[in-house]
Amino acid sequence: MATTTAPKPLTAFNYVTFDVVGTLIDFEGAIVEGLAGIAAKEGIEVKAEAALAVYREARYAPDAARFPDDLGRCYGELAKAFGLPDTPENRRHMIDAMGAAKPFADSVDAMARLQKHYKLIAMTNAQRWAFDKYAAKLGHPFWAGFTVDDTGTEKPDPAYFHAVFDFVAQDGGTKTDILHTAQSQYHDIGISRELGMTNAWIQRRHAQKGYGGTIAPAAFTEPDFHFHALRELADAADAAFGA
Image (cartoon, rainbow, N blue to C red; front, side):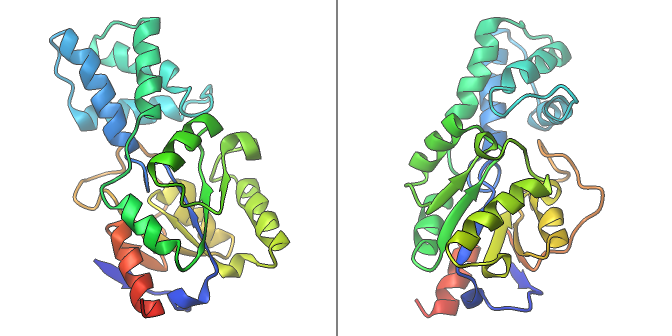
């Protein structure tokens, strides 16, 4: 699926900014797999969507720390909800599971193709240690990368985006030269619209109901470009540039 309401063609952008966790890296799969490993030892079955719902509430609690180190605290809530042992070892297991999260099947190839057309910039709410792991798994496609450690804040805080705007300005660009690409309506698509950016929504959960491990937005934002997979954006860019 590929739809567009954007006033500009894909050839009009010099930069593509990316949410990483959830758009390029399958964090929901990492949570479910990590939790399943603990649950199996206890003879307990945990449904994936139920686990993601508990994680979502825990992750966005007022006392949340930086992702993915915060998976330890979140595991405490998951353990409570599903009757699992809350041990330091299990908390560490969940943090490590998130660090080991894998790219979606189309991410590496799509990023390699997009890299031929644009300067790619990562904008992740993950800590630098985790982002470095993810960037390596993606084939190091990024021209630049911003993490929560660099900005001191998380999306959807506008300050995060302005840090990237300032960086791009040093390269001679402006926010109108950027296509912001993400799966999260809450963290990325809504705020990018408010800030006057053009955006591309990668609807990773198009075959599933709800928002999974990501907080639901207060209101849905119709994106400029809408794809079900990252490869669809890469296909569209290749076609636009005549590749």
